Length: 123
Image 1: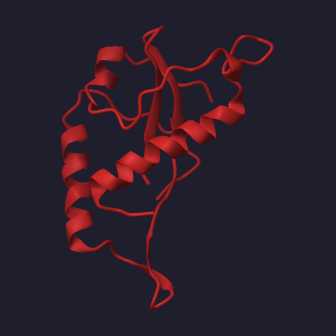
Image 2: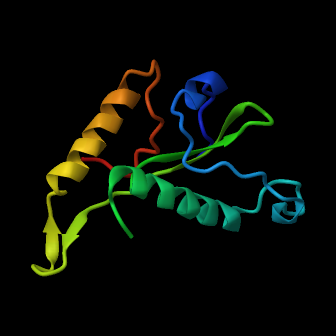
C-alpha cells in the first residue's frame, strides 16, 4: 500500500517525533530506495520512545516521514493490548496509561487530516 499524499506540515504537527534518523546509504537497495528490512527496525526503535511517553514499559499507529522529499514515507499499524502477567490474560490498560493514550488521541484528533489506515484491521 502506497502512503497517501499528506502535506508535510500536517504530519510534522504530530511533534514531538518519536525518532529522527538520517537514513545511511547502506540502507539503500539496488533501486536506490530504503530496503524494506530497515522499516521494521526503525519503527521498532521509534516505539521505545512512544512507549516511554505513554508510561507503557517493554503500541500504536506510527508514521515514517521522508523530510528530504517532504512526504509521508510509510505507515505502521498494530493492535496492542495490556497483559496482566499474574492473571495470564489481557486486561484494560491501567488508568494512568489509559489517560495518557486518551490525551494523545485527543491532541492528534484536533489535526485537520484523518490518519491513513490500510483497512486490514477493523473493529
